Image (cartoon, rainbow, N blue to C red):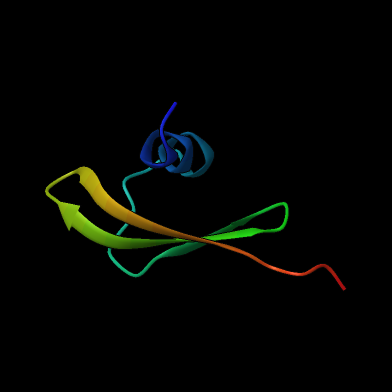
Length: 49
């Protein structure tokens, strides 16, 4: 499964550009959409406090 597919699996809906999702210590941001397809995702690791 690619990152876009993982985001769709977790959200269970089509996200909008700029939408963010947190999973474990990761923050995923949808950067670009083309219709219902996620074109670009930014994934950042966050430090746990």
